[in-house]
Length: 181
Image (cartoon, rainbow, N blue to C red; front, side):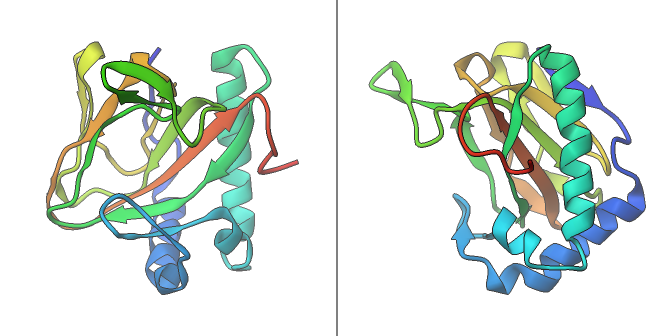
């Protein structure tokens, strides 16, 4: 099931997360498919200005996911990310990959449910597309999108044509180390 919750975050929370990304992205140890800095959970937790807000947000999302999934999943990881003009993500699933027309586990096979919080408007393109569900979602400030992490919900991100697209993906698992205890 594909879930959309408008205004899951308020504008102030979103702006705070965008400012945090801009302030600390040069310290990022990870980069995305496009080579853009990704603010990982460790870096978020080391920043006292944003740590409490991010923990609160992850706990709110976790409560919603538990209601949707009807099982106790825990947040496996969360990041802050941004995409600029010309950036996109190819068709993929979050817990497996297509290898010679066969779906096999990827580097994160324990992920069961994926969520993305969208933190801003004011950019072109950047829609998340789910071909099998015939859904093309234009992100807006505060929108939460959730979906199962497997191949039934293969998705891509259309090319950002102008501006910057900020997001906070959070992935959930049944097993493995919990992000928040």
